Amino acid sequence: MNDCIFCKIVDGALPSNKVYEDDELLAFHDIHPIAPVHILIIPKTHIVSLSECGNKHQNLLGRMLLLAPELARKHGLETGFRTMINTGHGGGQEVFHLHIHIFGGGGKLART
Ligand code: 5GP
Ligand code: ZN
Image 1 (cartoon, rainbow, N blue to C red):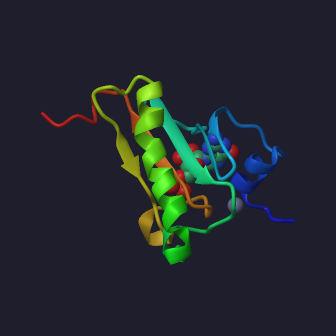
Image 2 (image 1 turned 90 degrees about the vertical axis):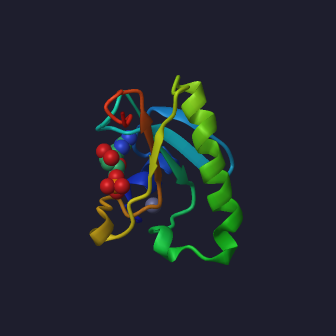
C-alpha cells in the first residue's frame, strides 16, 4: 500500500482538519502551523512534487492556485497571505505529495 501521509488523509485512513474538498482537491489545516492560519491544498491524486507536473496538470495546478485566495478570504486573511510550494529535498520538501502552503494572520509576515 502507498505509505504517503497525504494519500492516507485523502483516503480517510488518517484524520485531518478539512477546510475544503471537491472531486480533485482537498485542503486542511497544517498539523504544525507556522502562522495563525496555515492551510495545505493538495490534489487527491498522488503527484510527488511540482517537478513531476507537466502539461496534463495545467488545469489541476490552476485550480489549486485559484483556491488559495478563496480559502484565505474564508479564514480571515483579508490583508493578504503567503503561498509556498517546497519542491524536492533541496527545496525543503518533507512530504512528497504535491501541496501548496497558504499561511498568514501573524503580522510578522508583513514587510514594513
Ligand atoms: P513540506 O515541507 O513538505 O512543504 O511541508 C509538509 C507540511 O505537512 C509541514 O508543514 C507539516 O507540518 C505538514 N504535515 C506533515 N504531516 C502532516 C499530517 O499528518 N497532517 C497534517 N495536517 N499536516 C502534516
Ligand atoms: Zn500521496
